[in-house]
Length: 159
Image 1 (cartoon, rainbow, N blue to C red):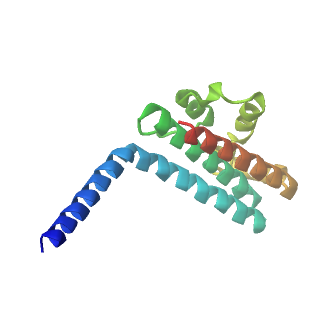
Image 2: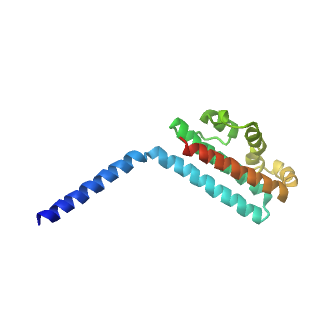
Image 3: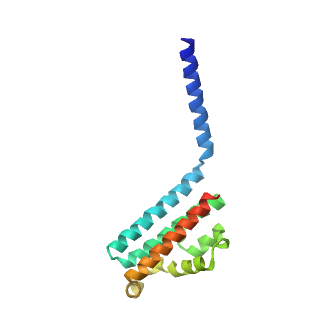
């Protein structure tokens, strides 16, 4: 009987110690970072679906959303704060500090997809944007978005 009680106490203590460890290891901020990363992953999957269905306007929009959300994950990771309510990629990259790690090519890519958020939403821009976006351009944009997103995830994993 004493051995059973000892084993039960040991298991209970082991479980409590593990719960405390995991609570310490994964703070609520980690949940917020995970939230933004998962949204970014969902958005890139949506961009791929839009490409397959030839909805090119929304490929650009979802590429912007993918990068916006992964930048918000990085912002949360580096500042410990909830990301600001903005769609401005340059602002997010600056405030998070990641701009200092970016290549000129990555900065140029951000400049290129920045207007996709606004132009996809307003009628006066939609027609012009629809004429500019082709399957080839969207495939390239999606590939660049994927690379940039993966690079930011890599930066997150080294923090």
